Image (tube, rainbow, N blue to C red; front, side, top):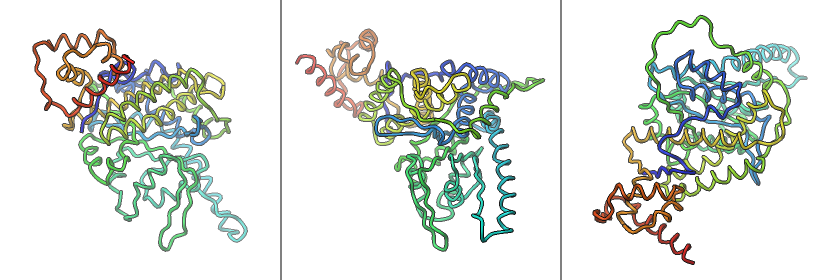
Length: 432
């Protein structure tokens, strides 16, 4: 399995998480917690955005042409034990847990009233916002009664994955694929009432260790079905931590107040891309489409889902801006720019993980080198147009390779001939 890592307007070898493109209040929150806990900023940014996504649910929606998306995110934080990878989500989800408990108390009270006059009152339900250790049946039943969506949060997602197929053999993966696309689906079980889950919204957040993730991706048809490619992978570098006494933890007042507001209030949350945001998204969409066409099945699915995920990320960033800004009904350029930066980082995290697993990753510089090997007189201008890099960069690679002294090795990579065709086609177009 190999993947092209492009430069320029697409991806690069070094992608940083764009904390500086997030709303100012959120940047401050991220910086303070990252400093206090001595864990990466991108971990905290992702955790707080996930909390906002969980609280917002179906109250917000982004329309693009024939399609619409909720702020639904599936995120796995990849890290070894003891790195502090779990702390950020625990902090970010603490207020959501409190809301969940209050709703349970309300449900218990309503249930007691229902018991007293069962024949005349509809059975109450606990409108959960968070769910953890659960069976597939319980999860789907809970989804049926959530008004604004549900968030599955487990500190260690390995337990959730290991439960796949444990209780039944009815194809849970297929149901999750429908949920990712917010498609309505039904569940029919022997001796149980049938369930109809209309337009489900389910966030999935949790942590996982690298060795466990490798096993997960090789089981349950996760990669072949496209299930694994629907997740965003956060795999930061966790620096060694030194003990530091903290007298007072950073304040969460603005964040907690916003979570309360999102979970209680009604919002006119319909939004679409502004004109300049739409143009920016179009460039990213085209970049991902180019990569999809040139990649194997696994990476093609990654790039295809990235076109959807980036819209959902942009919507979450737009929601976060409501702390300081009024709702204009548009997801703005700054929202989509932040989302694109995050999406590139998540893809780079997956590439990093795959590299560590020993899977060959073909970098764009290697591809360009192979083009020169196949076609020593290839034009740096043509190469630049194909890969979205400068003529100077393409020329530099050619000079470093000393193409006049190299011989063609057609066996080095199976991508050589197709890439030769790309250059030739573009050259013919320019000639016409």
